[in-house]
Image 1 (cartoon, rainbow, N blue to C red):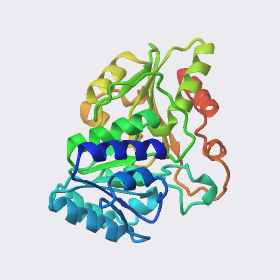
Image 2: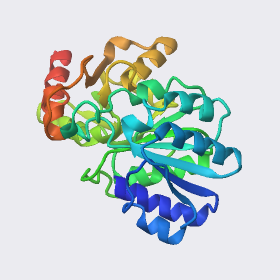
Image 3: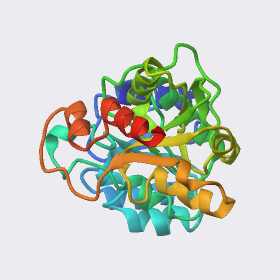
Length: 306
């Protein structure tokens, strides 16, 4: 996903002469093509993410279009106050990109896990929160965020994420993408959980349960029309996210559902429990440890359906 992000930024640099890239001492070779084409528009801000955010806000206030990029917890939790006051309060067009979101860096331990980023950033007024599912959606998300011109957070994976879309889908901030039709259950997949979501749907199909799968790539604002339809038509709505259950996409759906008056007994949230993951290993192993695998989700759905 990060390679496709770099590709998108390089292409957008041609279209937006005001686009500038700021990195927190990461991805130097990743942006070689961008630097070759736009040598005066790349800034390595070092291991100083809060400063990088302040610099980005200043550049935006001067009419430029900054994108900040580094490992997710360092570009969100570490500089939350600067994002809040320097970007969101003045409503500046800064795109904050966190790479290796969720458990992408599972082997590096809790310092590099990011299971709270969507929760903290979606609380901020003016902020948009996007979690693309695959390399295709990553490129589309960056392009959509540039066109939006508002504070936007994009959380992406690291590398090796499978390409889930055979063709380029229509991507609109605040509108989910249906990747599989179904009539019994709606699985709303957030970010890189799309592959396990489709695997879950295939397991359900073998059990005679028809499951719709949606890439719910935007957490703020939510696709309210899609949610209304799902709660009206489906027996069960499942939110799958590589994020903590507290404050994540499932919580956002709960908040919306409470206000909308839908039957929230239909909702099943699959995400990280309220604890740090102290074990290390590959991403799929980390998902297994936290009960976020396709097989675990399938079992929970079947138990709910009775």
